[in-house]
Length: 375
Image 1: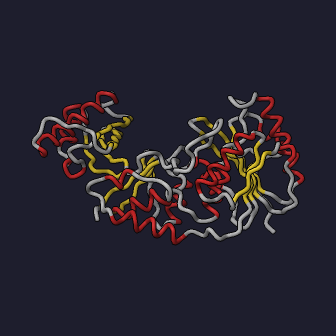
Image 2: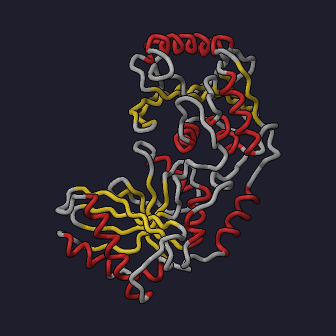
Image 3: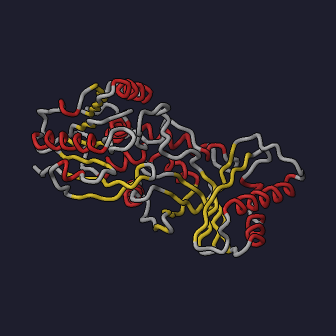
């Protein structure tokens, strides 16, 4: 197997959750460098991280690192990489990246220079001046920080929030990675009932069910590393087999999603069926004001309207007030809620035990945490 420096990216505010996931998967504490978690690993690790990480954005492998203070040095550094090992002759090469605190800061020019250097190296290796670029797309990522250039390959492809089951979305959807972070930051445990009273297209409910049943986040999708010519092709099948062996689909769980929108509930049921979980979760059309439960020590995890796009601000605050009144009547439940709206705690009429900054589609939000009492 190949040995790599593996780099894992995540949304701002979620890095600590990703670190906890890595620890749970048996990896040593990964240092965070410029917002990216870094660890050493091989083909098997790349496959496992893509398969099992629920809250990360993408997994990269660094193939070179060098200093460059001008475009000539950038070209030479990229040209010296053994690209013929990584890229087939027909590869579609997509270059993207960023630069911070560096003398090279023009991103568009950097993209063109990097691709030019790659093609010149491939031209020499494959003895041709023409490339069809009609094969699989290989995503080359560069990061220039304090004049140090890191050249990486995106092993995930699409962001890891693309689980493969949600091909249609409703209004103001939440990413699967953020939904999972909310769940992992909560005190939810599979033996406790869980409700999302504003479930939309069902993301929080379905991610909760996958966590409760120990279903790997990436079990239903493909990854770019499967198409790398240098990658051990036997690794992925072993990781899939491992993921299947860890599943606990026979567990009894109680997870419910409500929404006032009939179309949203239909969409949630469609997604549940795609996952094969239609008999493990329950979706129902219901207004939040009608929500009640006789069960104790349940958990509410939800992404309600913020008063932007979906509802006006006053209507959103009215919903929070209604939810606060309902929460008071529940028997020792927890509640975890994300919103960008100001005045949530005032409308809810209860100060959170904790709150932290999270980002929903680049929108700064607060994640409010109300924990149940230990019994």
